[in-house]
Length: 246
Image (cartoon, rainbow, N blue to C red):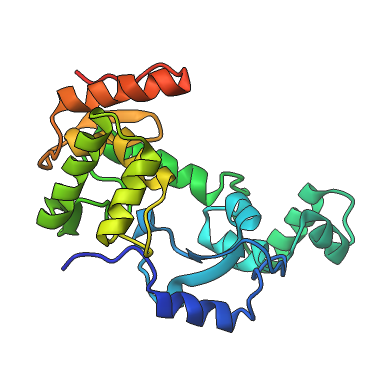
């Protein structure tokens, strides 16, 4: 059975409602997102029980250790609050008092969820695995494997063909939206979405994650030569060196 990585719309709405539409750490009402308490890389599922509402900033800085996350990070909205609570002079002293209170024996792991997930996913890619991303346009995921989506893969080829024939990102977007071709998420296409597809080596048989690029086992949609040609075209417009695959 294929694992579902993304929360459904209904579960996101339920999580936000349960959190009173506030970050569960700092109570901010801005940039709210529903995240996994247990990360995808550690087997976390897209169930409501594994959902936590955090603002973008709190999620970026959150520790990976689940005990620390639940019993320290979510308990105090800032190091200052923890220091005041324990009547300590420094964060280290406050942390030691928290350890004595909870019996926690480990050290504080300052690596965030994002940092540790990147490390694990990069390791997986180096060893031929797939990173824990959602379903990319053009493919479906079944039993941990990328499988071609017949209709979407045709659209991917069309996007590359249109770009190599000289159409701009905006014109490609206009064409797709006019034809009523649905993206993977949302209702409309945007230039940033098209740009990500054109730059993604996934479509010519490679996996890329955090600077690691490796030949993979899934079926390619675009020939590597066409992909390289598109990268050169994009490079001329951005003045950045192109990503050329062998």
